[in-house]
Image (cartoon, rainbow, N blue to C red):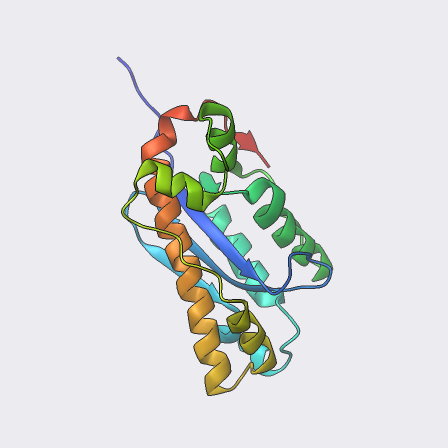
Length: 190
């Protein structure tokens, strides 16, 4: 009798205020259960600490870590080089423990090693695969507004833009995963 293991799997993405975690903070994360399509949206300006200290992402990072650790496998894109290291750096900065022991798949490596595309960006991959979902363009002014106007209606609107961008990235990633999941041979443990 063949028995296959059933894993809880999530695709995820984070958005940050800077590309370097010693200068930036996490602004939001979206985590989608691949099986149920249920999405968890975590945002900086919804955290209780936001009202007291707008420079802190401690509660947000803790919430993201807890949400990710609820899954057996997490899937990102360029997440080995960006999302996980950024989040771990912020966790350490905030006096917390890093994410460890999670099985992690970075679909960038599936695209890089099993396909031969001109560019290994998620945008190029979605165009090649003909996905229904597509990445949205980044409007850097929205990141600036979200930070400078944090706590105001305009700051909230800018954060909504960032969160919607992150949601779209996760929807795209889920569709890409569905199309190239057969290329996954190894799951790294972080």
